[in-house]
Length: 69
Image 1: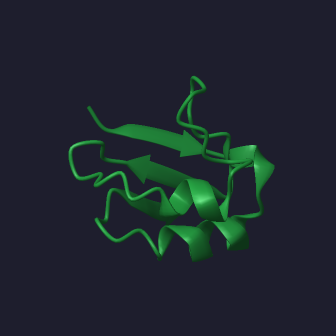
Image 2 (image 1 turned 120 degrees about the vertical axis):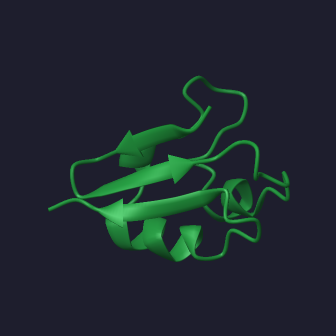
């Protein structure tokens, strides 16, 4: 089941079936991505630019984003 998280400016889409659990997201933005928390993404803990830059490094494509208009 895909999940979406939004801060008003950006919406992050997480596709768990694609996730390879490399944890680049957790290592890059640990205040945003916490696999032990629920929800595990706290999008408001980073700027939109920080989120976009991190999501671009996701090796599996499990994380993607859209800019809200």
